[in-house]
Amino acid sequence: MHFATTDEHRMLLESVRAFMAAELYPHEKAVDRAGIVDYDLAEQIKARAIAAGFYGANLPEEIGGGGLDHVGRTIMEREFGKVTHALHEIAARPTELLMACQGEQITTYLNPCITGERAECFALTEPGAGSDIMSMQTRAVRDGNDWVLNGQKHFISSAVVPDFAIVFAATGSDESPRGPRRRVTAFLVDVGTKGFEMIRGPRAVSQRAYKNFELYFDDCRVPASAILGEEGTGLDLANQWLRAGRIWVAAGCCGKLERLMGLATEWAATRKQFGQAIGKFQGTSFKLADMATSLQAADLLTFHAAKRADEGSMTAEDVAMAKLFASEALGKAADDTLQIYGGMGLMESLPIERLWRDARLERIWEGTSEIQRHIISRSMLRKHGA
Image 1 (cartoon, rainbow, N blue to C red):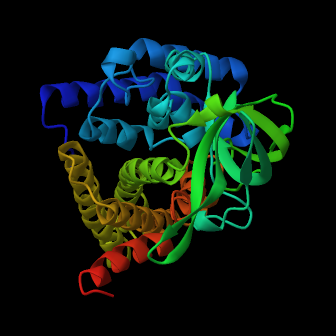
Image 2: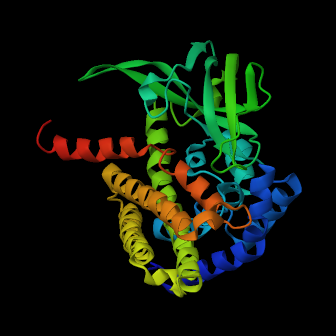
């Protein structure tokens, strides 16, 4: 099932598929084994993505972006999601959060990111505060016209080495009906700023070539002009990122699920045991039927959220449902595909084991499955005053 219902969306889908066939698929095996995207290859992909109009396609046309609506972006992310995220992100940067840039920030951060001259990372997660943003320990204290940052971030991911970080820090507290509430502010901090150290984090078994970094701030001094948006609006910016990001994760999961289903179906139709194709055995055929059903349901949830985002009516539970269902459906499809392939599915000569490994991360990043269930159930209970 595809939701490319307009001529523009159909052209986008065909263009992304052609780009992936020429620029991304040929490199995914080598990139995964190396655990890194070679600099020259990354620059080549970025240049060709810019030429094709994919780089920054999520940003408004008036500032040099592609001006895609949410449905268009979902179509693009669904296809890009079929390959390793290390290749995918290089072709589709930067983040919408940079639209909050003001004044000189536009020329220093936003514009160079649109042209591919600079790259950012989103620094929210901490060792003791993953999905619990309000528990973050990174602090920023006002000192004259400057702010002084202290703290640590980890699992800060990026396909490339970032030039600067969008860093979230607690800058005080405000009273709320439920008591004091931490005030969170976002800062633009350049790599190389005194007191800011960034090192490569441990390599994960999922998305092996997709870098993650550890960030350390030790009396890191930045000017007040480094605040992204306004002081105290960091939580709104973080939620903006997370909500949109969950649509893209769901879309990528749908793409991977479709790819796995295609591989499983072809294998089941051609692999013979006991004198017939293994797809004729119910143990295999029912797995294929479950994949097809789950894919259609995941697509419907994902594009429903994207359409509501374009209408301005998307809710937190819309994206939570899409991300939850699509990531868990992908996990089951990856496991079932490997089971259909048997021992061959674990061999590095085929893409199954890589897709299986990569699929596992989708239930964790951008909010775990448990967090998505919490968001959905909380919304249900609130309607009854709980």
